[in-house]
Image (tube, rainbow, N blue to C red; front, side):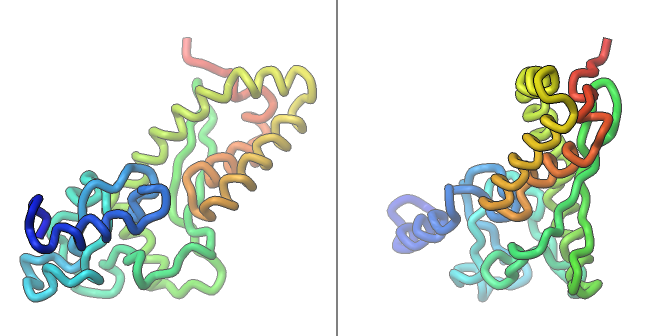
Length: 204
């Protein structure tokens, strides 16, 4: 199906184009480059070319999941076709003070979510190694805004930095409620040490 010139190639390419901004719906960061079998074809060969079983994904997420087969509800990653988890904030983060500061991501428990859905969110988070991925991107982003925060702190102090970070969070959430940037900016804005100069503490 995926080979160039094969009868199903047009459908394969069409499914890959489904996500907005060409971003992998499993991690929300990397570009879509392949299709993942939500139910592994090694175990469900009859569904190997069923469109609803083909999830647009980046090659890394496809590799991380590989042929994992769920044996219970809690061992299922999110399926972007049927699981609407975009309205609740399940991705959270905390600022870890240090030289330099870092951000650690985890899964929270949104109000109204059953324990089974929270367990699935944690499983999704672990399978696709989202904590490592998001922390890596957060470190780069925090380095990139350091100069701006330094200038803002010199003019408006801690409150000015917090206000700016909250504005950044709101903008990120408008795009994606559970984006790593939204969780990161929320964590940074909530940490008084970071907003009062901690952003500028570097390793010697």
